Length: 146
Image: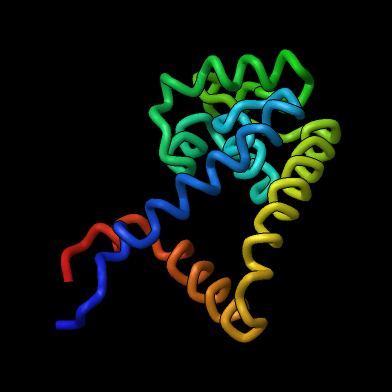
């Protein structure tokens, strides 16, 4: 056993600070945190159903409908019927949505870079590599007891 705080205890203040720092950026771009999460997921994968998107971003599929409505009304995403299953909708980011997403991501990462600049370059690279590795782990692997 090591004498260190739990990971959640160490990361929770950082995550809260990062979220708080993102709020003004999101507000300046006229998008919600959930809207940005949707655009991020769609920017990473060209087409998704609403159910698959909800699972990917950790949202209840019925609760993101209003977010999807707002994004569609703003011309940032499209929701077209799936030709194989007319009950399902295929989601895609539009060119305008991709442009907004890049702008928001650039602004958010500029703030993150100011924080990361406080680390020596080797520590920064190690931290980002470890964060990417842990983030890629599937939900069932993360949730499975050791």
